[in-house]
Image 1 (tube, rainbow, N blue to C red):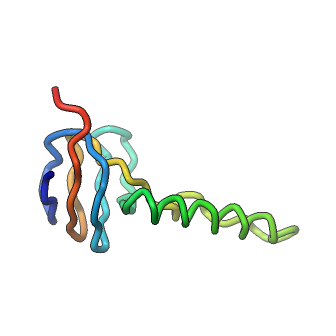
Image 2 (image 1 turned 90 degrees about the vertical axis):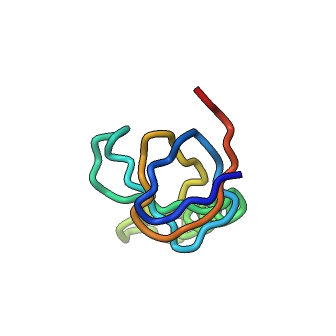
Length: 93
């Protein structure tokens, strides 16, 4: 179990167990400057279901942005840009 907070560089790959407004800067991995929302698996699955329902009900309107769905994965070498939480290490080395 690893406590993560603002400015911390993630030491290992892991899964988010707790999140308080957690966002991660993954530009070191992806080259994208957007800070991505992170949350627990349960919250992420719920948000995915809501996203799918919302997009099905929008016929001729603009679709919802899939980047609004948080991810439970925290990757080694990325940094916490907002919030804090707890993660469980899943891959080391």
